[in-house]
Picture 1 (tube, helix red, strand yellow):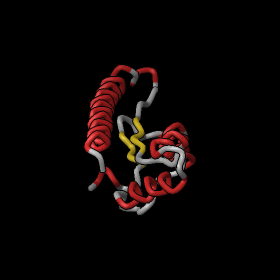
Picture 2 (cartoon, rainbow, N blue to C red):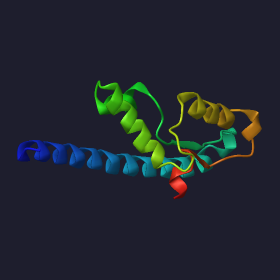
Picture 3 (cartoon, rainbow, N blue to C red):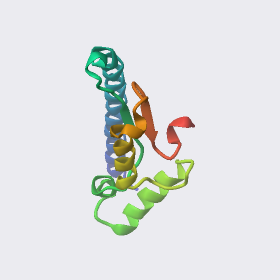
Picture 4 (cartoon, rainbow, N blue to C red):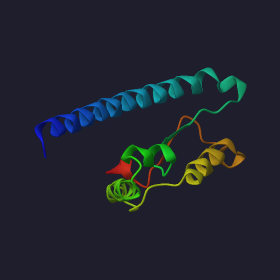
Length: 123
């Protein structure tokens, strides 16, 4: 592999790492807001919870690998290998978690962070 190409790939990796770090910082801030909001909104009967989704099969995720279907599947397979359930999530699984938190079935859930990530956050 030419040196120039290697440098470009390393640059992309560094850029993605910075984005991941920024996402982690943002997620922490959202959790902190949620903890504060449960106290601010308690008198109005409003519950505040957060959802932390894991890798989810969406066009945005798949397109990170480019237009080649083989590379896209390779990305999904790699990500699945990092998840205890052995697969990436589907958008409807994230939606079902959100519906649960919005429903009366979770009426005593407040200030929680629900990880919908196939167990990845636990390892």
